[in-house]
Length: 68
Image 1 (tube, rainbow, N blue to C red):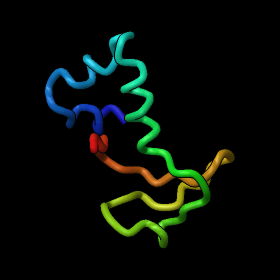
Image 2 (cartoon, rainbow, N blue to C red):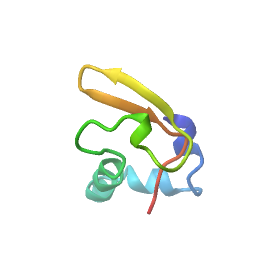
Image 3 (cartoon, one colour):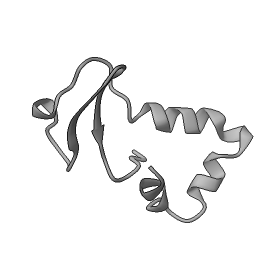
Image 4 (cartoon, one colour):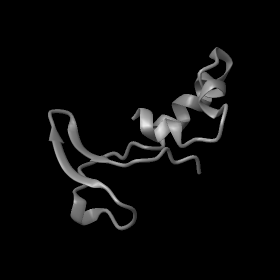
């Protein structure tokens, strides 16, 4: 996760970690979570490390923070 945040523009992470930006940080993190069971075969774009099965769901690792 640290490597992904390192790719953000300078100062972005520091700004998101300010108490007054808690809602923005929460929204950003939630943007990376999908409801339901989505397996690698269902992922259409971008490089992912596929189908890491965990007790709370399926994880697909990405190497960047999605800001859009």
